[in-house]
Length: 195
Image (cartoon, rainbow, N blue to C red; front, side, top):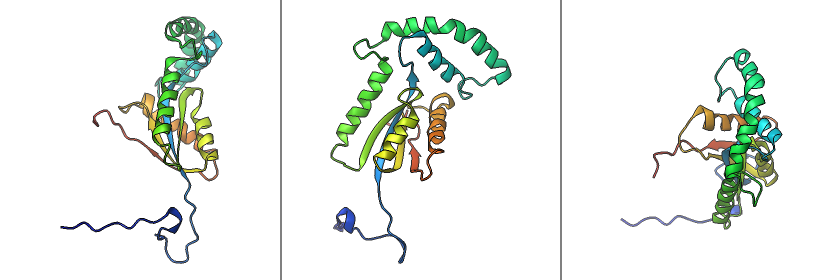
């Protein structure tokens, strides 16, 4: 059986799927947002404390009543853990770039993906962290500034967990709440068993 050839149209000459009389719809760019967990901004104890406070204040991460958890967090964890955590980060820190390996690797993944899509002028790639910087909100702002009217969120966690994927999506939608004309958003489903 012979296959019917599909017609190819230049982007601006494709037939409209809109009903007659519908105003034209501008098709914008597609943003791909790689999202990872996060990292302190530096090895400084105050930066580590700020990161731990943000991370451990997330109700998706610590599912205790705030009346119980906040005194533990502020009275014990944030007074004792930051120096120890900073010392552990120091063991793996990328001294050349003055950043954690997670930031180095995530940036590299985003840069490589952008290279792969370099021939597709409408696809823009950004990356953001759920906790710390660059934030998901700053990545969304960048994609919007690049004319993206659709965003594909790619949490870099293959399996679903409320403590990773769900909280990353929460943060993405929190960022979008500040945008009047928000883009269409999709999030990649779990892919741990997808070869």
